[in-house]
Amino acid sequence: MKSVHRTALIALSLILVLFVSGCKKRPVGLTHIPANKGMMAPGDEFGAEATEPVGIGTDGGAGNNNTSILAEVDKGLAIDNGSVGTTGLEPEPPIGAGTDGGLTSGTLSDGSIEQAGRVNYNEDYDMDSSTFSSNTVYFDFDRSNVRSSERVKVEEVGIYLIAQKDKAVLVDGHCDERGTEEYNRALGERRALSVREYLINLGIAPDRVFTRSFGEDAPAMDAQTDEAYAKNRRAELNLLLPKN
Amino acid sequence: MRLLLSLLSLTLFLPVSRIEAATDPTDIDITKKGAVVDKNLIPVAIEGFTGETDSVIKSDLWIQGFEFVSQDKAMFLIKGQNSGRLEGRLIDLSKNKQILGKAYNGASARKLAHAFTDEIVKTITGTNGIAQTKICFKVSTGRTSELYISDFDGHNPVKVTRDNSIVAAPTWIPGQFSLIYTSYMKENPDIFSHELSTGVRKTVAAYAGLNTSAAVSPDGARVAMILSKGGSPDVYVADIDGGNIKRLTTTRETESSPCWSADGLSILFTSRVSGRAQLYTIPALGGKMRRIGTIGASSTVTEPDWSPDGSTIIFTSQYRSGFQLCTVPASGGQVTTVAEGEDPSWAPNSRTVVYTRRVNGSRVVSLLDVPSKRTKDIRPVQGSCSQPSWSR
Image 1 (cartoon, rainbow over the protein chains, first blue to last red):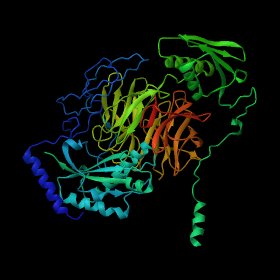
Image 2: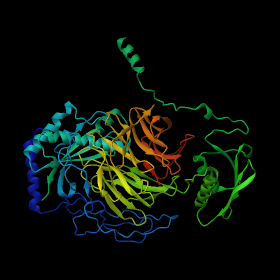
Image 3: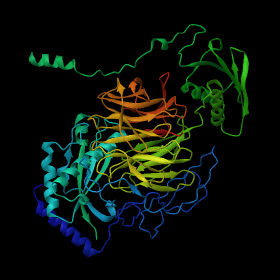
Image 4: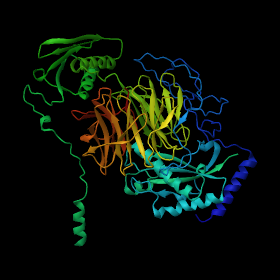
C-alpha cells in the first residue's frame, strides 16, 4: 500500500463530509437496526404480533421499531402445514440476557483470543473495502495459517491501524468449494481468525478486529479451475470507520 | 528422459479417481425364479392402481428397500384401486392371507398414497414409513440463498425465507413445526429459530464472529452449535432459546458440524485438532473429546450424522476427486462406502438418508437407501439445492 497518508486523508475528509452533512447513510433494502453494541440476548423475539397461523406466502413485513436496544428480526414466511394441526404460539416475553457460563475472559490458554461484543457493521461503521483491497491474504488448500509470503500484507494493515487509532477492521474469511459447506464456513472463520491473531500480536487491540466467514458462498471467481480456487481461498480486509 | 521417468513415477502416487464401494458377495443379484434379488430388498408385486397413485406407491416403496417383481417372485402383493377413494390391500403371499386392508380419502392422490405406503411399511417391517415426513434444504440462486421445506420426495416445495441474503445449515426442531438455521440477514452469520405456522423468528445466537451449524437434541430442549466468540470455532451447547450457553471444546483448531446421539448424552462433531478433519464425540454436559475411528475413509472426514436408533454414523469422506458418503458403527471402526455425495441427514427410520450431490457445477438433493445403496435424485426447485435436513 503506497499512499497511506493520502488514503488516510481521504478517509478523514470522508468522515468530515458525513459529519458536516449530518446525513445518516442507510443502505437501501436493509431494515433499520438500532445501534446495539452489546451481544444480542438469546431468546429475544422480534417484531412478532400475530398469534394465529398465517397462510402460505404471507409477507411477514418489516419488524417493529420498538424502543428497546434489541435488534429486530423480520418475520419469516409462515407456512401452512396441511396435514398437521397448526397451533399459533403466543409470543414469549423478552428474556433477559442469557447466562454465559464457563467462559474466561482475555486470552485463553490455547492461544485463542476472545471476541468482543457484537457490532452491527452497517449501522455502527462505514465499511471501506478498497483501502485494503491489495492486502487480501491468500491461503493454501485446507489451511488457515498465514504464509510467510503473505505476512507483509497483514503488517501493512497493522501499521495503518496503529496510526489510525479510531478505526477498526473486519476480516472476511473465504474458501474454495472443494470442502463441504459447514466445514468451509468454519475454515473461512479460522482463516479470518488467523489474520486477526496476527494483527493482535502486532499490537492492535482485540476489540478493533472483527471476523466474519462466508465459507464457500462468496467466491471471488466462479469457475472450477485451480486458478479460481486459489483466488477464492482468501481473507479480505475491510476498513471500518466509526459513524458518530 | 528424466522428466518422463519422474512423470511416470508420479502416476504411481496419484490417488485413484474412482472409489469402488466394497461389495459383499452375498449381495449379488440372483435372478433365478423365486430367489430373493438382494438380501436388503423385499420383493413385492403390485396391481390395480393407476396414474399418480400407482407411481407414488412404487417410488415410496422403492427408496425404502422394496423391489417390484412379478407375483411369482414376490413375498407380498399390493393390490387395490384408486378410482374414487384409495382402497388398498396387502397380501402375504406365503400364507395367501390379507394382512392389511384399508380405504383412504379426504386428501390429494399423493397424500392418500403416502398414507397407504406408510401402513404397508409398518405392517411388513414393524418400523414407521417415511412417506409422510418432510425435509428442509437450501436453494442458491446467484449470490443469495433461501430455505425451502418439501415432502421427503421433493414434492410440494414451499419457500420459507425471503430475506435476499445468505442462509445455511437448516435443521428441524424435533416435536415442533419449526426450523433453526444460519442467516446473514443481519450482515453476519447468526442462528435463528423460525416457527413455521406463525413465521415468528427468534435469535438463538448472534455473537461476534461465527454462529452456525445448529443441531437440536432429540428431545428438542437443547441446541449444539459452532461459535467463534471464544476466538476459535468451537462446539457450544445451549438451551433451545440460546440461554445457558456452555462451551464444550477448547482447541485452537477448527471444530464443525455437531450432531447429537440418540440418547442426547453425546455430541458428535468434526475437529482438526489432529491436523486433519476427523470425527470426535464429547459428552453433552462437558468432558473429554474421544476420537471415532474411520478406518478405510480418507484423511478428511466431515459432516457426520448419527442415526436416530443410535447404531450408525454416516459422514462425508473427502477426496481430491470428490466426496463419498460412508457409514461406520457408532463406536467407530471399519467404514462402508455407500454413495458418491456429501452432507447426509438420516430419516427417522435410521435407514434412508437425504444428501447432496454435485452435478455440473451445481448441487442436487438425493435420497439413499443405505442397506441396498439405491439412490434417487429429487429436484424440488430450480437452483442449486444443498444442505438437506430430515424432520424427526
